[in-house]
Length: 191
Image 1 (tube, rainbow, N blue to C red):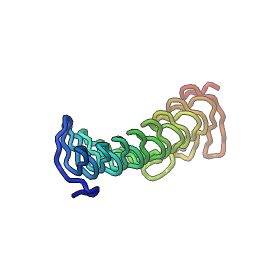
Image 2: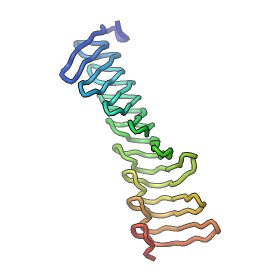
Image 3: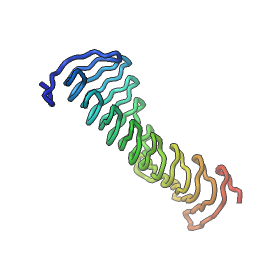
Image 4: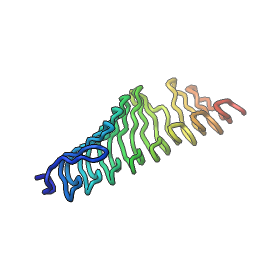
């Protein structure tokens, strides 16, 4: 008998096979579902839907560990990508959504807001040593809105961004204390 007092059985479906606790002829409780496309889920089911904690192995090599609701990644979890980058944070309806941290292949990481699967909102980018590179607004993974860029030489740009380049009003702070204000258009000074 399983965790919920349900019997453990193997059951075949059109899209794969299931082994685990069954109630009323459907997955309910702890079990493993192996899909014909190569995906695999090991975790909790509630009346045929993934719900609670589990691990989902994607055929492409990605792996999600965390919470599920109504068959989707939902709640707190970690998504390891096949390319060795990964995301730790909140999910909503199968997408990265809310606060989280995305670790890039080069060792840098972004920490901040995600919306509908994208790096969108306020956040910061750090290098692999933990030095802050950028802090401000992002849109679809690019610097967009107000933000500050912190250069390795100690200088700082503080101002407006559009599509990952300086665009609008900004101030450049030099290490000698000099401050220059400019208007930018597509990363070029216009006045």
